[in-house]
Image 1 (cartoon, one colour):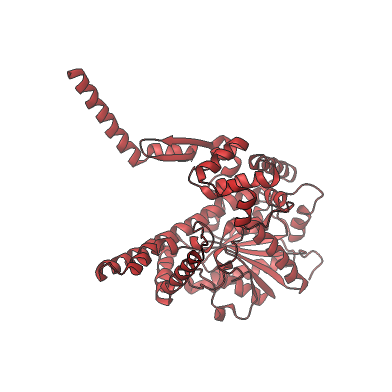
Image 2 (tube, one colour):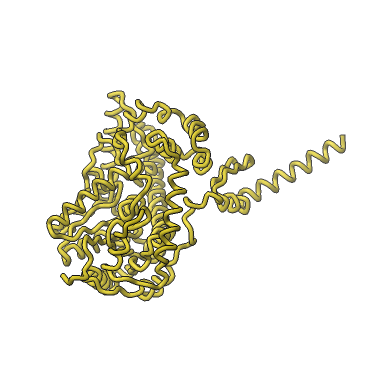
Length: 470
């Protein structure tokens, strides 16, 4: 390898579900002596290959896949910190064998936490209680097991900024913000503010890429300076974003759900159902708002599974319930794909901008599955080869019209870093609470709100007229 080649390189593959990330990872690992690291939170779980969409063994082509099926149903769900630390160890092991680590991200929150230094995770990592199970956390801090309104009341006492940040029903995020304070005695809002300040300093000192594309060696130097680098990439990293047009992706995802049902999705849901019943029989409560229980399909098929258990629903109605569950699963899958793309275009792109590394994410359009080799596999291989050899990479937006359009953040800031946009406003008329100014404005302009407002205004006019008449 040439002297200017990147040391400790990492290749990361991101994109919406159903775009072919796993297929590309196998192709690149085959060509560049790589091993694959799973970055999908649901695929961490053992078994259940259909509902978690694990790549079949035959399609892995003998390439080692790490962090795939490593968490049993009886085990505590992994938090992002445990994933990150475990994945970093796996990366080190892969490199010790002289091989290239290739991260395949499905849960982009996990992927991004691994790619970048994370101030919050590293602060908490120092605490002895970092790896406590949920049960042990509640034993140590009983408030975390209380009803959500009690948790948010406590959070308001210690960190009112974060309490106002979250929707009052978002129990997990409310818990997490209070948990940070309980573990570190530092406010999550202060940590976020410090992290933002460091990112701003980094951006000012190193400059934004804005068309400047460095060699892998230069990126490595940027990431190893003697300074705080909480906004920096952990390693010289090449990111490949596998994309597909919305209409093409919609059809693929719909077909995939149909295939999942044909191949045994209901059988896996029944397995989860039996496990849940067994746990309940042992007096063990299951939190179905986290872990494998939030896999797409679990919530959507619950009415059908419940109807099957009761055996009281007529066959025609039962079949209609099943078909409705299939359609809801398709809709949820499509919505998830949209959220993944939004994460890339807002969270990831802004993080790369702060790290002066927007020249290291390349979008490849895999809409045409019949031309996958030419449009995705071949250019990806050329990019990885150039990256590993330390050659100057092309301008990402130059690869295609789609790349030029999509490789621009949908907004030039991360909402988590803009306290001035955090609000807590409630519409009593509609029963809605907004936590962002843009959400509140969107609600006020929405059809439902405007219709109810007009109805309320007419009712007030009628009431006023009746009082005047009396």
